[in-house]
Amino acid sequence: MKVQYEPVMLGVLTLLLGNAFLGIPFFSGFPIDILSGVVNVFLLFYALIRRRLFRLQMLASPSLCYGIGFLFSILVFLNIVPSLQNLFHMQPDKNTQIYTLVFAIVFLIIYAFFIFLWKLLIRNVFVREENHQAEKIREFNLAISKTLDLQEILDKTIRVMKDLMEVGNIYICMQDAPSEAYCGVASDQPLSDLAFAFEEENPMVQWLKDHEEQIIYRDFRYSVEYKSMWEEEKHQLDKNHIRYCAGLKDGDNLAGVILITSSSSKKRLAYDEVEIISNITSVASIAIKNAKLYENARLEARTDELTGLLNRKYFYEVLNEEFEKNRDASLVLAIINVDDFKLYNQLYGIKEGDLCLQRVADIISSPLWRERICCSASRIRPFLCQKSGRIHCKTGLCYE
Image 1: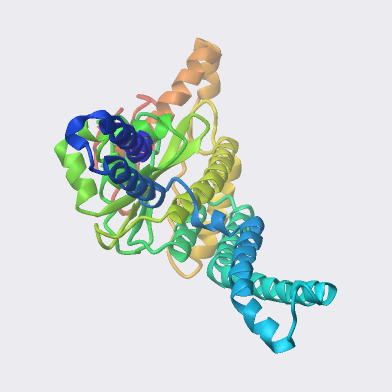
Image 2: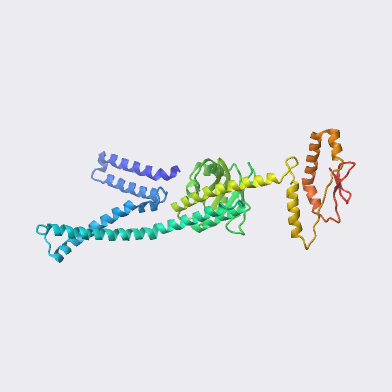
């Protein structure tokens, strides 16, 4: 974001102004250039640490380990040289070869010692934590690559984020269909209230669609998109102490939105968390895309293309499952027969026959039909009248 580089630009401007003011008589004798340099240093540190322009782990490179060890070795060596000369009674001008050999060996020992200590510190402070994070993400990648269940993928995504970050709650919102709102579907708390949604026109949602990186909410509050949001939308995010907003992107489409909250609005943000979220959402997005493709293929395989109803194969699967579930209970099966349908096809043609089947399917799928079919079978028994073509029931009610 542009806001990350603002302190750097402000520091450069301060440094330029400080040197420019040296030619003004008013600042004669005043160290304005030094003061501007100090301000520039503070602004740079602020940008590097608070605005996350670099990773602290990058400081632990091997070359830096050797460089710091070399500097410390020189300092220590220079301080112990007089003591070594007194100890061995050596004079550089008399014992040149022995003097050089002994002090070279001493310097190498000191250097090796400092390199060992520095690497030990780096391994325990930085590398161990990085290895733990890498192992968790590796386990997460392996786990979701073995499943095509969408809810399981969402649960595992939430769980790995909770394991690797110190955050409050995590919510995932997804769309059921294009142009619909993003509604809450999963959370790290089983009893969390998921009765909230973000419209597709929400500026935050639009920002996630247009950008690959996630939203750091503290910085997003200064953006134009945040200012264009409704007050109710801002209040919904502020009251939950939202910390990050990440998108689950399927190509150019935004499949879902992850909201990560903080237990305290004053808690500092960490650069590592940004990287962790980016890695997890990238893998989760691919898994969600595969799960949706599988679910669509599965739905097409068990759905009749003409009527939109479930086909015979799936009917028998459900029938067997229901019989197994209700071995010791009651099970009602309603069968509808469309009489003389062959004659209807011969009289009006196959096209009209298809329209007739679609009409029957619409009637069966209607809410009124489902309401009646769920009633007691002994009180209401719907059927299709052979003469009128209407669906009747035992109570005397009739509807098309």
